[in-house]
Image (cartoon, rainbow over all chains, first blue to last red; front, side, top):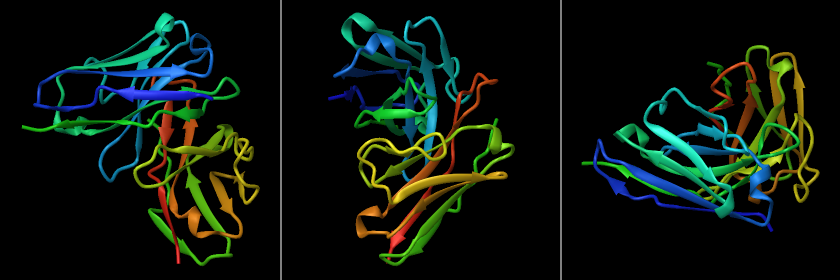
Length: 119
Length: 109
């Protein structure tokens, strides 16, 4: 069974940093492209970042470019999101999500981890 | 940037058909995918590549596309279908890969 378990969400002050993790199981993690997607309270889904299966290519939404870094450790079946210079606009549930190998859509999602940025 | 437009909400009686639309410029050239999200839960893929269903998704869920509009159709709506439904496309010629519609809240009367 495919599982994505996210963690690391917390309450932080504006300007602070946080690192999210997502541990994958039930599939060959190193063969899949992965993403982070977030959802602010009461809002829709927003794609945040992408990483190639090998980790050699990353892409970011303009709203986080230069502040967030996506990475992965295929030996540990783990995906990460390092977030810095956090602002209130980054308050959201953050989901790790797997890109299907059959097309560019998300076939599995983690349960989400909540990041709250507040003074 | 790429904008996908969805109506914020719609309501339908049990047993009726719900048609949720997603509009976008030149959407005909893109593959459209649909997700269902219930309160407090992660999204679930219900239709991919316009009209394909993942295993475990009922045949009542179907997708189509015409012109600049993609449509998710839910036949014989049940109370358990009440959720937010969101469309998604992938834009290959951009560094911003993925765009979502704003979502449509489906209420079952």
